[in-house]
Length: 551
Image (cartoon, rainbow, N blue to C red):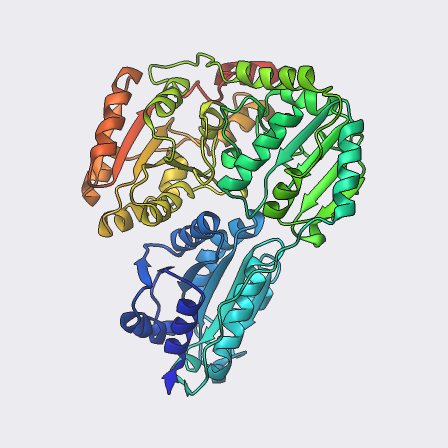
């Protein structure tokens, strides 16, 4: 006989769960009691449910298996919604367990009662409420299967607190084995014909279930066929950015020359990417629903094919199997793309040459130091803000799994993601870039990093404003600034108050040494970069932005 909490934790152990992230609540004390007894599952207690949910999402992205988060009802579940939304938009497997009031209290608007299905039904792949302890193994297996199947995503599981105390003789379920799809022979024959008939082909890669092996296989094929490859929004680590066939990324502030080449292409091969709003520049680079370019769309979920774009050829396939099938293609009898490939990849090499921006701490210099100093397996995380424009433009990712950034564009993601990454890969250097506004959204998780001895490095880009919003404000209403200025703490002293290492950089010449000290530190480090408020983008100053849009 086991109580529901113990049955639940045993099921997580069967499914391979190694770590859970939580903010404790009285509604799931039986689960905490079970975690106390069951080994091999580490419990990370966070300081806010949004941080816990972001860590679970980052875990899912890193490991391709559901990251697990536990929160309590009402306020706890509400706070965790941001992590759930990131998991949905980033196609990341994740399980959010929510403690609930006792079953007899339901539908009376009891204390902190929360309609899980009504609130989360639109952003979760499924919402499951477990009312009987005997069904815990069945429903946990179902949640795992749904979370990883097709296009991965989050599943919410409601846990009535009295159900968790019930006892049952129920047996454990076996580990879920993900179902994978592969392209048919006729698919690949059609693919080869369309590729060979193209004059200006271009491949866009992204989406879930990628791996270093897929990246290496793909680039071998791309090199053999002279096909340029670009990555979708915040998927820059999907291939080695130093590879001669890499042509850049299709994201916010896209290289204008790359945008021209995408419009010029006569064949777009979308491999794994959904072709969302950012990647398609608001569905303009690739017109929806029927693109002007010939379109081949490959995705692991048939529901994503034809959802927005009516492709000329749609292929349902897991990335691993499609990359393997690409390796079996016959090499074209005539190689008619080398000049096209050289042209488009040349634009990328030109675009990453630093453009000088105002101030003594220049972000283009900071990113190039990161390129020089960080090892190839260093993991770089970030949230949202204009500071990311320098990172995405100048930093060169060398291996898959080294970029953790929310495609949902959520602020505050960088620090929780960095903590998760360092817990998963303690021997890797982990660096978080965050704006001053971005960092303060989840800054309390610095306490979590100190508590568990996780020596992450946080670079706080301090321009004393919500920079992205200020930029758009100056574009739309020049000189009429309201609501975007910030008052910040001394970030170095803030870090020291937690027991972390803190430094302030006022000139770029001091950064390299500070970064090396942080890498050697045994505690978390916060390096404040005091940047000029005029430097809002890698190419234009705040004044130029305002003047160009003023009458």
